[in-house]
Image (cartoon, rainbow, N blue to C red; front, side, top):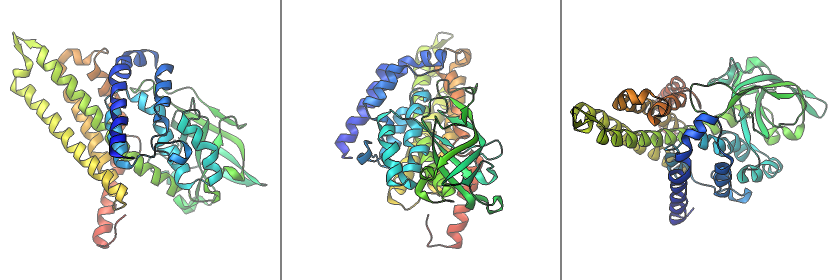
Length: 387
């Protein structure tokens, strides 16, 4: 996208957040849902397809542009971003990168328009950040497959129209090499969704369990038309998603700094604005410095991703640093707000709860450390190798 065109998109998103989305934060928190009016606005602006190809109705943003958009979206309630994030991210990218032309044509235009919601069904009770323990099975049955198993913590499961389901199609002893992915419509007999999980935070962004009881799909549901590509599809989508999460974390930190600075300027102790207290200034300075570092890091990582020079180490490093950073900023924000920061009507309290999940999904912080270390060791073992 041309720079001026993208800047206009970013300005429009920023205006929507400031004028309508952020003022609706309490409504989203209390009702546990994003209002339909905001969903329609997001769809009209093309946000359900910002990372999907133009030929399928998307905006086809680069990774650098997507990160800049994520930073803006991170300033608002995370449920708003979650509403369309999976379409663009981990679910949509499986179809973009691995789907057949027929599968792409069937699902992507509707996803880009906000008429179809996708869900990324990978996580299981014994297979989270590491899918090698995946037990959901897809067994050949005539000209199709029978899928049996269960998934948990599946974002947008309650409203999804299509599930990108990861299932084992080979010998479990083959680990990640025997995983395939299927596009399963919601109305397929045998597919059922549990009640929404009652989470610590991120109200309005729903997750739930999904069960597959002899779910029969045709061969055309096998993404890419080939078995055993599921692990590669998941990892490629997750690497992109990690950079997006890093951007969200930076935007969240920016918002917390805004809220904390404003509070420090107007709140007095003993007749003196707490902004004059050096220990409060120190906390603000630490927040601003860490957020500045996170912004520089995720933008640099996004540029490398776009160039193809680093699609593994940098996304994990950025996700690790930025999400951990957002947690520290949220903790300081509550401290700066004092007792009022512990009350439910406080943005600091809400972001404190919301920020905690960033360190868990798209791969935990511990998994990101493993990836970074392994990539670092590989590079030193093979100096010319980059991934």
